Image (cartoon, rainbow, N blue to C red; front, side, top):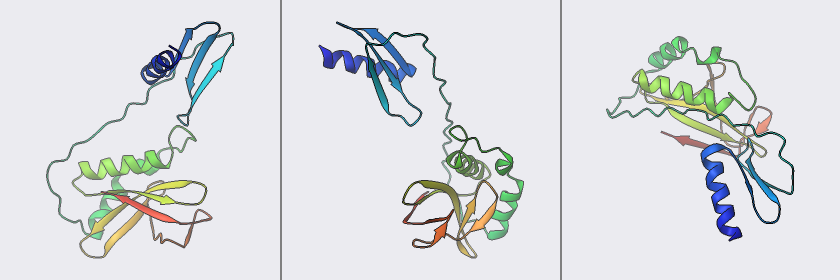
Length: 168
């Protein structure tokens, strides 16, 4: 019975972000924190329940195969894209959001763009990349529009790059 109740609570959390039920013998409240961990609190008095806002994610389906852009086309796109003018908000609009927006905008503009994760010892950082027809792979920091040259074993953001993951 307790396992079934916990599964019900977790299902409610997945749908609403917060669930509260009364179970024998004490109330149980389940929360999903910002880093997606589940916190179960026993025997507490609920003062107030707050609804967690759901961030809408848009998915773009691109069906046509794209040819490789030139460096000039990538530069033209990056200079016209306004993503770098957005404000970084810790926990709300971070590097992964900048990279996602540039990636989606590039796809809409007809350019094939990769979402890239630079892996460090204590955290990760998202950037984008374009495979160009004239100079090959170029990485762009979407928060500043700067071309960057990450390599495993070298340093970026005062951290050693341990791995580079590229998703096309």
